[in-house]
Length: 570
Image (tube, rainbow, N blue to C red; front, side, top):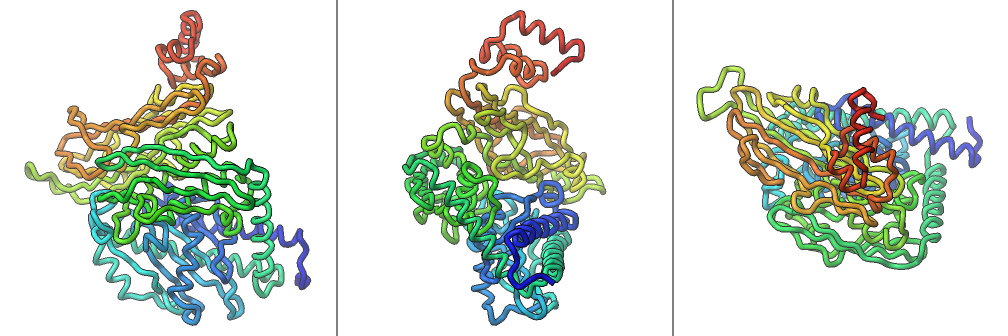
């Protein structure tokens, strides 16, 4: 039994234990989820909260968009459910875009944690699910009502009894009912795992509640973050960037102001709400704006309510980064994933030499809706299926390191393996490889994008829902670095396609995609020669690029190519 006043060391041990608890919570979700977006890509979040709904710890596994948006969600659950209605054995659910994580395809579940009959905290988790009905996952809707089934904050289970009526309603409105209900139970189970581990920790340390450790976590996190902010230049700077949008360009404008104990990020001047589903609720904009600044100035301070609080975010209502109900928001991540690059454009003017060059930004996702061919009799084995795959372009070069190839920043979502994608339905990935030359030249080179070619098994046609950007506005280099390569998409017969929207692909045709590269950082002429030779040997750059962008001589190129012929690529 622990003393009534735990020491600082004991509190630190408990803090570390809580971080381990929520990581186990997240891994339980990965192991039990039905959707490939969770199992293979890690598009999820998990966290533990105090009785006031303040996030105390988050899992390392997961995405900033989920976890930072979910940081605000539990307070909404408490308000909507009502404290007097919170019971042991309850499980709560929602996919409300404005009180959850930004669109209907994310389901958030919250479970109150009781110990000896007393409420001691909450566990919450979020997962992206493949289908929620409606038009499907894409930008084509013109209001949130078209985008799928809306589940308000409500009880999925009351005192341990699941609401079977809710389950039947959900099953009746989605294309993949077994998969979705399986994901919901996986979410509920991972919260239960967190609850069990928390109770075990409390019993081990002799705690009746976690109020003391919560105060320790929040006070120390806030103080450490404020100290980092106070050490920055107390000034203001603006940033701006343009992205493709759906059928018209979108401009993000931001003013970052460092002032005393907080940093204000204001998106006044940003483009207005779009008629298509790429709008972003403020909760998701806030999640990525806070993330951008936190990784720039306080990456080593654990993420929780107090370490996020000094980062204040505002945006005028009706802008694309503060879209109000009933704006369509299915692809809110496309805009949201560009928020860090816009913030970095401003922050680089306040503290030079810290933030990276622009990268691919949003995930290079696409969803394939397969069905038996309609232009001729279909074979008996042909079937309908929904296959969602997450992919990445290159990340931007950093001040002292190259950008990462085919790696999602800022989302951190993993690229799905071909085997998992093809297992989900009658789809064939004919090609998936790095895209040489796509990383912008610089003292530090941008990360490479990738090529993908997708088709359907014989007897099927399909619609592809493209969710890309950077087609007309590639990643911009920083401090003399060159731009990354843009996105391209077309059918294999050369028929052009759009970077966004649902598009029909007839039987026998394939879709050929090239995902964008990250931009370079610094003058290419300053890149160390050994790194240029290494890139050429590995096929990351061409002979022409080695000569034209980096000034490699014919003799140097010949020596590298001779090494390659002999199997030496270091």
